[in-house]
Image 1 (cartoon, rainbow, N blue to C red):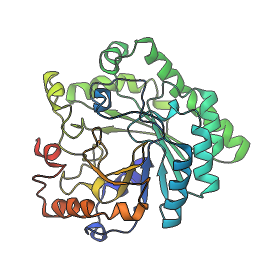
Image 2 (cartoon, helix red, strand yellow):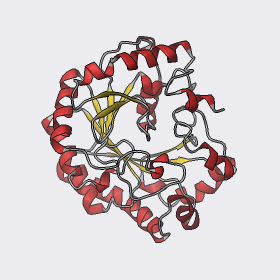
Image 3 (cartoon, rainbow, N blue to C red):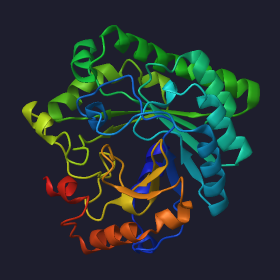
Image 4 (cartoon, rainbow, N blue to C red):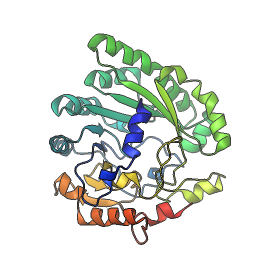
Length: 317
């Protein structure tokens, strides 16, 4: 199940508690920094950095390099919406069949994931597809995502059509992609409201799990508080297996690569403050163990990130 994989990534083992580390098991790489939603809980909508598409040659070079280093799981997304990338299915096929990644995964808001496009992705070898489903109804969707409410129905329709598309490819090729959904609890009341919305898609996915409301490196805290919500510090993983904010697993167990080739230490690097190296000029392993990355890891291991890029994120309680 997807929650087992998530828990393995967010669990910092004894061998991970070092400043110099071997290549991570899992890496997310951003095909595009763009998104067709403007969600208020996501700092991407603040446009604090340029948002374009990754150069395809850079993508292919990095994927080959990381696989040779032993990276096993590759996520073809980071902060943008990967279904905006016209060569998404080709990227999946390259990762799975040209590079030989055992596990290729993807997260999407679902609005552009039509059954036809999904079939191409499944046939290309996608192992896991998760839908981020964070709105209780059309009205809340329009308020939070800043998109016209009829798109909510399209998103639900695409999610509901995913299982038939997946099963058709399974019959044709024998390959079966896992289908999942996550939702943000926001607070207790929202968690209850979400259950009716989840009933719309429950039979279409293999597993659904909840996430806390993240503060996105403290960039959206003020706005969330004004709505009466209480965000959580750092990235504590999923509800039911929350981790301590310090040390943060993202600094130790998973790589994050932006569309322009920057290696980041954070899941929420919307403004570039967590960049640890430039992969357009440096090898992956050199950036993964750069001086600034080692210094940041040491601060996390001391559980004192004062004066580091992580200070504002975990300071909020």
